[in-house]
Image (cartoon, rainbow, N blue to C red; front, side, top):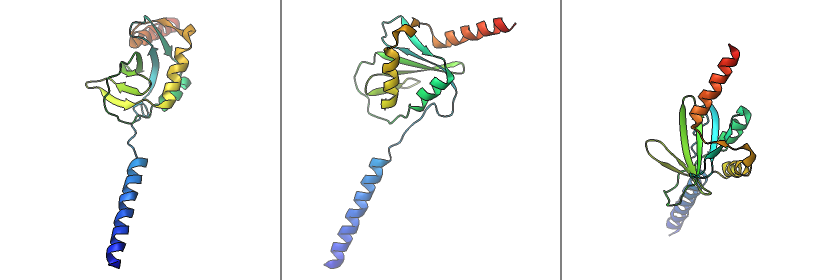
Length: 153
């Protein structure tokens, strides 16, 4: 009888340890860790014709470091904010809301909104004096590069 009680306690301890380990270790995806993002554009309404672009490399690094994504189930909320990350010659879009961060690609990848990134989204939304006409971020970066090259000649 005593051996059976010891086995049950050991089994309970193993189960509790497994639950704690699973709860503490959630898979986090950091999509911008090893890539150089040259620009981030926030568009706060799909009906809006303006956007706020971040071009400062230090600020971009601060923002991208907050993008630590944890997978979640797809929900049916309306994402009114589009965030575009320009990496090299490619644009990577995410549609976000207060609790979702959905990366667009060949398929939609659904993640929880990182709280620190949400703070940046709100702070830039409140900086309407930074707004500029909505253009493709990749088009904007090409325009900037062309201006810099024309000055250098």
